[in-house]
Length: 125
Image (tube, rainbow, N blue to C red; front, side, top):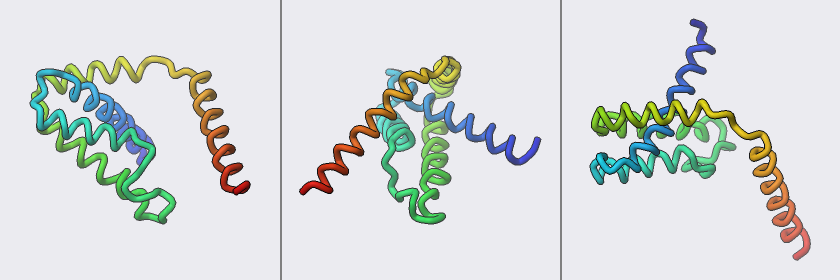
């Protein structure tokens, strides 16, 4: 397996585990402290806001490469095995669903309109 293929597979596993941690956080069998940590890790991984902005060279991607995988690893180690297995199955099913191109376009249009309104507000003060 080439390095690029290995990196893609790793990224798929991380994506699956982020979704699985989200599902595990909602499972009543997950202990409360682990649930709180799982919510924090999933929210950070799925959030468009970063601790270190990505536009800062090299350092900007450290949170994506270190913080998220380490947080996932910690939550996965703390989860009860049956909860983790069920959450991973749910994540795989959720990720197999086709993604809506229409929804992606709608979100992009909303962002462009929002950026335009913000830019207009800044330029016309």
